[in-house]
Image (tube, rainbow, N blue to C red; front, side, top):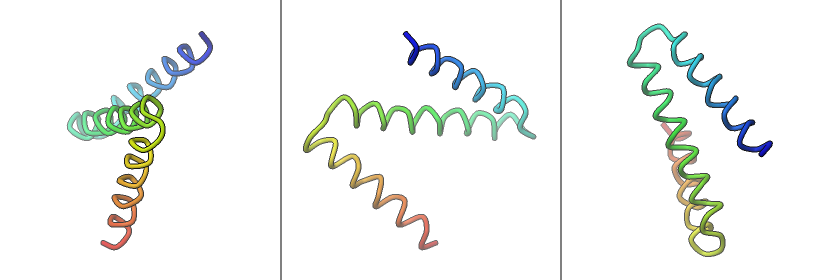
Length: 69
């Protein structure tokens, strides 16, 4: 029960931060990126083992490619 309330408070703060951004498009992209990151983390938890390792390796490759630009 504590994790559900913690997640609710996190998303509440994320929505407040999205509405405080300078344009609605940036707020919507912020919320979409949070949903994407949480979805990937959920898949990482849901499928441990080989598939979790593949998700983690894809994240590492994505992060390393972003730092080269």
